[in-house]
Image (tube, rainbow, N blue to C red; front, side, top):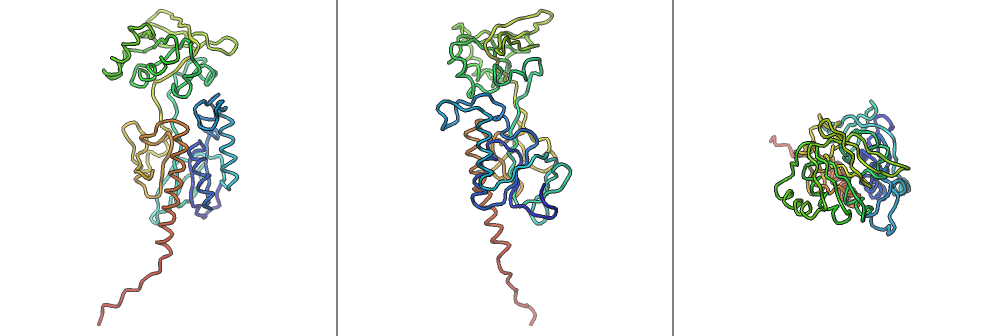
Length: 328
């Protein structure tokens, strides 16, 4: 925890790839940087079994390994990474920011919010245990592992239909399990119908998954309910697309602006509506929800932080000009 009354140059909330990349840039610029993480260093990337689309790793890289190397790189240049949960941010009259971290106040000149988003879960047996090993939430990240395999996709909104269409390029067949009815846009439903007509996709309406079942660590089927009837759908993997939940609960009273999905709005410099408070990665409105782009946004945010600190430093250090006495 930071010393009381000390003002840190930049505090980053969340130790995922975006903030770790940002910390590499800020610390190399000799900007004092403290990163707070409440859970796992590396975020969702760290608990992903294998990442196959991150540049520079032709054979793919284990999520935990990538997270560890990003952490080491940030620490190499002097970033301080602490475990702590931020529960509040407020902007002070002097434009510094006070964060509440595990009940204690921490003051900073700038803040980077990179808390990411979490996938909405089904909350059924087998889902958590098989995460990254048969249960997935990102088709772009993990779809290629299922070439010539059979898949189950859960969800009925735009994301579920869009990702089902994407996964048809890999899977031999996809069973789309929809709790009620397909609610995707008409255009997406029309595109999906082509694959239904070809026999590559089967849509199951009114089906609610109850368990993801595996044998010897490999997914074999999804158990589900259709009304009172028990249903079994054989599959090699399960992709769940029932929405994202931005990790922004602690910001609800901060005055930060959100979009209609609850993601944080920023300008082209990745600065929020609060001066000196920046945002990058999956929690930002307009983010592409990919590790590579989150890392790039972290670098951009770091450069914006440097520019902000330079600008405010010049203002603080500018000599005061005595106005001439108007009295004669």
